[in-house]
Length: 307
Image (tube, rainbow, N blue to C red; front, side, top):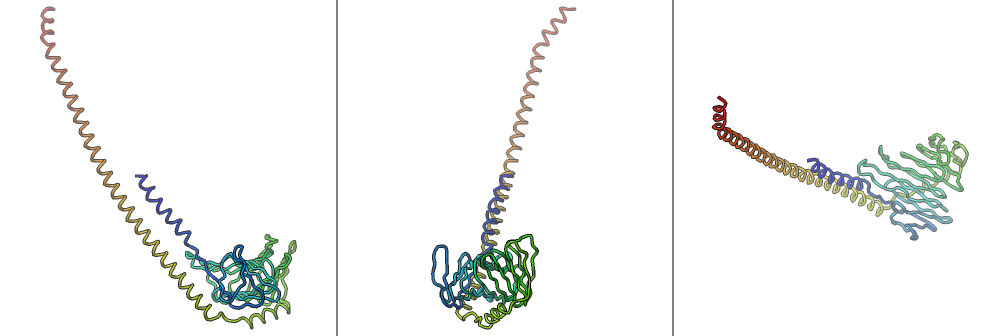
């Protein structure tokens, strides 16, 4: 019976592992606007970026002198400024949590982020650099990195900043109108937002164009595809579970029938053995009685001789 239980558990475990693999769905960002030299690096392949190009997890974006690119991730957007190299490290939806994760890594240069969409409880939008990680829930902020010197400047909202070069240092909340500098072997320095960075972010905010109509439509299409994929996967999982339940029930019933047949067989065998044993005992008793009857005359004769 234990073997049957193990056999039933194995498919369920396999199905569970399979479901876990399907918990994350890759999302896409799209190039909305660009100027100058902008290159998308996908693995070892480099190509010039164009408006409408897809941006996916694992890609890198490189900008040249006097260049920039605006990338939309649904309602949220980033502007990668000139002479920058940025990697898209996380761009996915977690089906189980019903959450979206967006993570960029600025190897060098500057990125302005506008997190317009209100993030849900398990959502995450963060930008990392070799020196810091900036995480937000809805704000406008600038992240810069050059020669292991980082900067996080906040125009509106609040940015949570953690040092990557001094992990033991406490997290700092950088609110609107403030900026923090992160350097190797130094404590993070929080101060007022510089006039230069304020003007830069205000100019970007004024000039940030809404996502083009075709890109909005692509977002809607992708969102619908993801929703359908989630529903299809959920239905497949339910169907697989019901199918497995039916198979398990059938296996259990078959095992019960087999066990019952074996019990009946054992009963018949036991009764037959007991009957054979009784017959053997009875036969032995009859043989002993016959032997006793055979020796009785001799016993009487011997007793007469003694008298």
